[in-house]
Image (cartoon, rainbow, N blue to C red):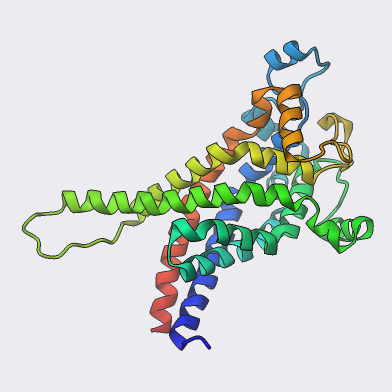
Amino acid sequence: MEEPGQLKRALVDTSAGAIAGGISRTVTSPLDVIKIRFQVQLEPTSSWALLQRDLPGSSKYAGMFQATKDIFREEGLPGFWRGNVPALLMVMPYTAIQFTVLHKLKTFVSGSPKTGCAATVGSYPFDLLRTILASQGEPKVYPNMRSALFDLIRTGGFRGLYARLSPTLVEIIPYAGLQFGTYDTFKRWTMAWNRLRSSPTSPIVDDSLSSFQLFICGLAAGTCAKLVCHPFDVVKKRFQIEGLQRHPKYGARVEHYAYRNMFDALFRILQSEGCNGLYKGIVPSTIKAAPAGAVTFVAYEFTSDWLESIFT
């Protein structure tokens, strides 16, 4: 049986993690929608890639600003928060589990892959729903989350809610490891820098970091993880929208069983779309990942301190 102090710590970590994840997701939702639209687009986004592969037509979205303008014109401001409800239902338990397990394992580096897998399995159905709703555009295939959920269960049963989970787990292990590992490393480097800058005559060494320093550490951690793992995220999104009906103006759809496995998907995307295909959406993704990581970590630190002050 756990001690009262351990239960209190777990409650603080769970609550702070959920709140931090919810704030971060809502703030960065527009960038996430733009990123997903690029990732599920089969047509190459560069004119050079089109010429090299002799492919007809052009892609619906060719650049981040053009995509932003088109989404706003066709879907209005709510279009940038499409799929945000399942995204919140995904992210809040995800970050809650992540930070709780993380504290239990006592270390960012050794615990992060395990926390990432535990959180991913628990929140995956909402990740699937978020991708489907955010990628469909106008006219909508599913008017709301409920209709998408019922259709997934009708066509694939409850197992359909966990369809293509494997690529997600393959992606999250290096991503979570890099994000949390680099965050801890950047924090230690910043503490060491603060010590070097502190007065040598001062007998007290303060290892606490300012909110700006925490923000920068989270920013750097999110950027590093996203740059390395983005191709896996593209593959994951392709698997998640297999067979999804979309209006022809959004280009070709990903057919059922278009890819045999993750490695086949990587090879086919590289073959048909070039290296750029594996990094579709990297600009909004990186712009999103950096502040998302920063906001998550800063919100967690402040919420955790606030909750601890209430319980003590």
